[in-house]
Image (cartoon, rainbow, N blue to C red; front, side, top):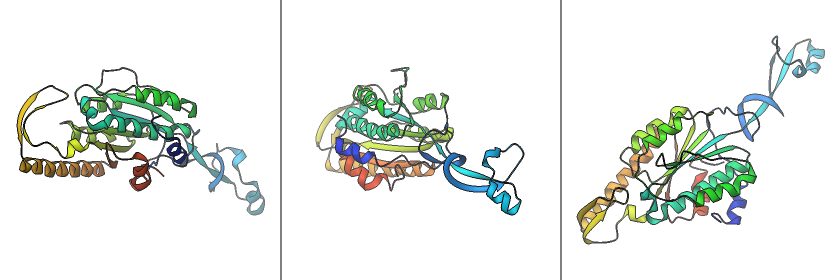
Length: 287
């Protein structure tokens, strides 16, 4: 199991938060800015030719001789797109394992609300398929798909973003799960909102990314390209690296705020259940 049953029970009581107008098929569980045909009264307005006569308020017509139609709340479904980084750098420090757990949690929340879920991985080209899942009965299939993911290939964020944007579909909620260790991360984040989706970025980093523990002379090998670079890691070099990583993380968070995305930084070894309780609601991901 990717997630403990106790955690799944907690997830039953939440749903994804959306800030933009939904464009679903009026079959889900998310309160919509549009008016629909539920039983929850929302407002009233004057009758216009062509309005459904069954919504005329006949009590008001009898009392005030005014033609008014009653408007009701609509419930929209939501299209959720999970975009998961499966490049080789995600294999360091169990980042991909954490990405699987994150995707499982958010995917579970999506499916039990009868929303539409598609899962996209990159590098683009590894698989032409982006499987779709709908309904609670698809939770097992989603979890098995996530467990099959492997970390391999080179980082290229812009290509999968452009591939995603080129696919047809309704506006919804796009969730990017990645370590963002790619030179084009900034360009990718600026382009992601182009569809008009709500956007959430789950930034997963390992301790090895943040602070190297070894000191001395080494040949560092890039896990994605195989390039070898001789380095001398002294305490001063490590300190500089830590400072640059902190500045970069601040830049990522700032870029996400600028494009209107929810942002969550998550350690590869962080207890996901505790993080969910502590910050995911305040970050605007869940409600």
